[in-house]
Length: 86
Image 1: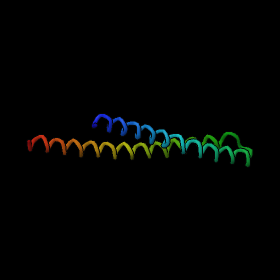
Image 2 (image 1 turned 60 degrees about the vertical axis):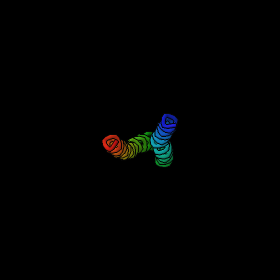
Image 3 (image 1 turned 30 degrees about the vertical axis):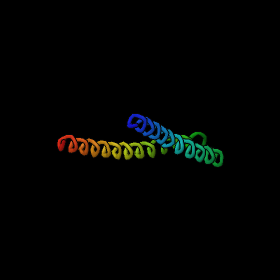
């Protein structure tokens, strides 16, 4: 049961990572493309949107990684105290 639970957690994390990368990239690239067409400035707004999405994605991934590491550390501490009490 634990292995199956771990697999679903890994798949969930992979899905979240995919959305974290894809959603800002697509939305900001489309917004950049819109402004490039409106102001005839191709490809500057598109590139700006892509760059901004990279910054946003990096921040989200860093925060998510820190939360995951904190959870892993807490789980390890709990398991360590259970083993020492036995």
